[in-house]
Amino acid sequence: MARTAVIETRGLTRRYGERVGLEDVDLAVGEGTVFGFLGPNGAGKTTAIRLLLGFLRPTAGSASVLGLDCWRDSHRIKRDVGYLPSDLRLWPWMTAESALRVAGRVRGRDLGPAGRALAERFELEPDVRVRAMSRGMRQKLGVILALAHGPRLLVLDEPTGGLDPLMQDELTRLLRERAEAGCTVFFSSHTLSEVEATCDRVAIVRRGRIVADETIEVLRGRARRRVEVLFRDAEAARRSEPPSALVVLERSGARLAGELDGPAGALAAWLAGQDVVDFVVHPPDLETLFRGFYREER
Image (cartoon, rainbow, N blue to C red; front, side, top):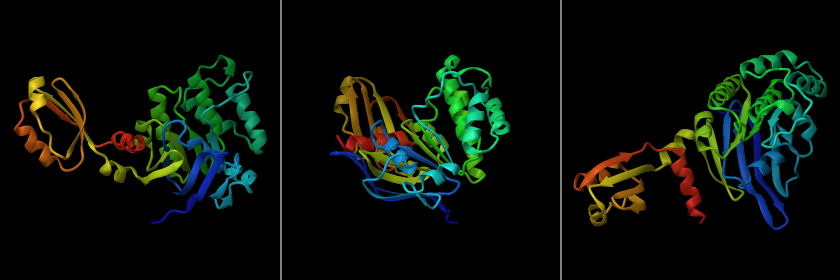
């Protein structure tokens, strides 16, 4: 069943003089989806978020959130959006309790009960001042403030920075729960593993353009397998002629590393005839695919 689009962009473009921040981007993110926006620093992820939230005006194209124009109706959109920026800044005198009171006055509702439940879940003490918080504690508070009002759309820009692995897992569980309840999550990251673990669908952005927009399963099916082969000695490695399906990326002494671009049968047949001590064929993953996209541009 098709999901109602919560985010839609058509030809969305933002330029800074001659520099391109985002170029001709088409996206459609359905209700209840955890959508990953993946790319290295400077690829255009934060520019896209600022356009969606009405902090920037498009140079060309259009963007809508919850059926409203992101620039003209920005004030209305923000009522139903929770946002965690990558460079979260909070007043040093604030505690979790006082931050929830301030945010509640801005939103015209009591965020205390929901905020305290989230603080307990993330093990954040409610009376510690921001000036005494670690980076991870400040990040937890940012997550709580983004979630406490029960937004229909949650926009997270690099949300796991500073969180320890246990809290990252807790955030993943929470995002899945919110998505199952109908909340849409737009999740920007350059960390491949967290996107793969959290998201239903992912768009890969390169130099401001979308180069892939697929479900996680489809992308994983397109990804190459990483292969490592250890020969008996350097001479055996030198004599080897890998099959065309094995793209060699590195040769070092008795070791060969590459990527399998095709069925494993040809690789197995080739290995059977080589003087090999050991080999590893890794399962396909997004990291391999992602690195492939970025090798193409150099």
